[in-house]
Image (cartoon, rainbow, N blue to C red; front, side, top):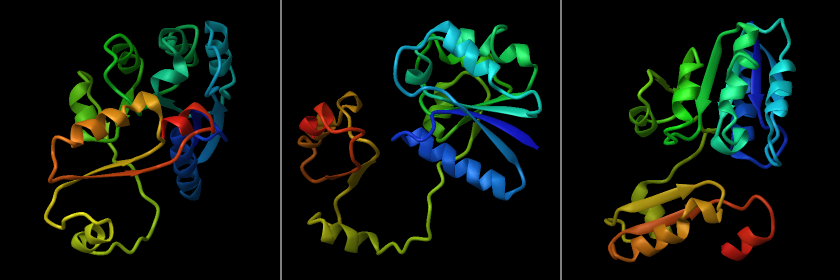
Length: 205
């Protein structure tokens, strides 16, 4: 089977890491994966979206699109439509890494044969039938008991703990989470992650 994976590639990006691991796992199962790179940064135009679609080889059996709003900047109609993927006549699977844009989500769902989300919250937010495939996690890991972990972080073992794992950026609103947590004095907050590039984001931290 031949799969075209439309994704950002070789950039500091969670979707790249996800797709890299998925592609390697598929390859081990005998699937040939073609990486179709979509720019992570910069201005997108309809012509760029068409070029990305045009670069998909004819021999692929399936197109798997990694979708996040910033990658397509409102040009989903062009990318998925008759000038883009629809013209190729191939089954389209879209993994939606974010949901909640009521203008974009219907366009993506309508033009995808299967929509994949990672959790029940995202599944409920979509009016379209979807499949939940939880995020994988490399391993194996040796995980100490919960009480021991909390003690090592100077958190009361009985206290609830809120966790965040991912890139730390201003638009993710972690400052608001920290402020909100001050109103729950008996709970703990654990933030694990780094920044994309040095600069404004490091000053934010």
